[in-house]
Length: 214
Image 1: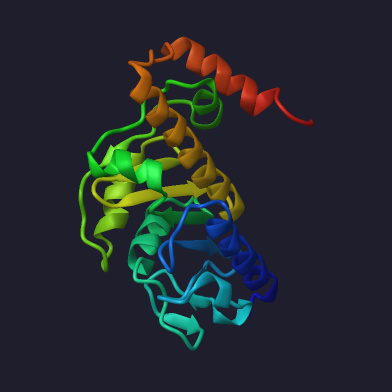
Image 2: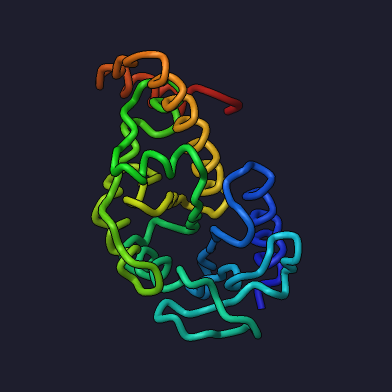
């Protein structure tokens, strides 16, 4: 089933180590097939260089395996909770990328210190509470904490990003780490100033409606 989606999801997973967002087998990406409503996700504990399209696991929204011979990611239940609660979400990325997870470790959101963050996120990157891995609890915290943002930090855990597609969620995950790294470096030098909300709104609008090719 869904051969094209399998190829795409496998390719996107290879972008995680390429962009320094994961170590060993941590992290995962899922995608929702708009036609069937099924979700495809990485198998648990398989190294990225060993992943093949046929390894991807397809489940329904309740977690029943529809197709795949491997055990799905241990984060599957949380991904599915997000999909059930957010009909606008077509892709989800979870990482433990270093700088962003450092903010999560101390339970801090990332204020808008940078125009790049205003462009991409339109506001702070929030930080939700702590939840154990393995059930849908993490997904519940994501839904409760993310608000209108495309990304959220999970206390003591890592990063979840969402998007209309898996590729959009992956871009957000890359940008979260880039913003977190620069914010951390700035905090070593001094106390960066937060960009006022009205400027953030203008920057975000320009990025969404003017920037790039139209």
